[in-house]
Length: 204
Image 1 (cartoon, rainbow, N blue to C red):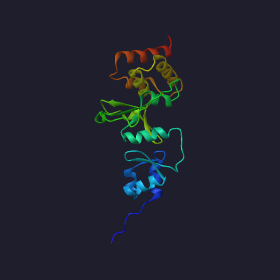
Image 2 (cartoon, rainbow, N blue to C red):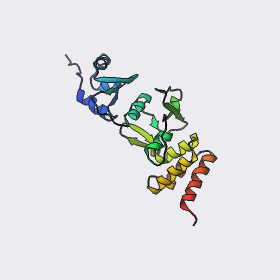
Image 3 (cartoon, rainbow, N blue to C red):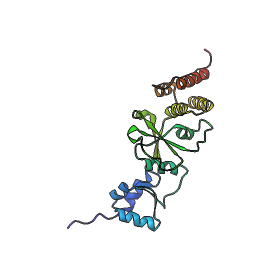
Image 4 (tube, one colour):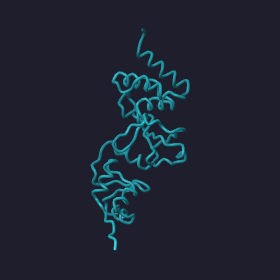
């Protein structure tokens, strides 16, 4: 007679810790929690349901980036924080976006934003691994990719210019990073970024 797989609270905590206290139903099942048991713990307040198949440990300490981890989990493992939302985290401009921007694969182009403050962008091709940065609980685009994506989507030119200057001055990006990210970008985006770099270098 086989023994039933009992809930492993420590295993679930460890899985949730990787996402700032957020876990999926699959995480719970791997830790020995059945769906009815998860529902029970939602009812008694130990778990918080964030959306379909996504939960949070209510005992886990809160942090200012929790929302990013929660939205990432709701959008799935392929979602990457991007555009102005990613750019703002590098503290290279005065941007304070009112919405959360995420990029997902083209296969998810019909995905519905989990909340009204989320904007979904679809990538026609897979993001280059060099353009993805792993943060605690979520993934985000590199500074170079964030600058290029923001410029293409209409971010104010002065914010793009400030981001480039600060990024280069602080060693957060290289000219080669921007050049690679500019591949197949519209002429206006390339002109804005390349002209900013030339002015940064100054006359020879």
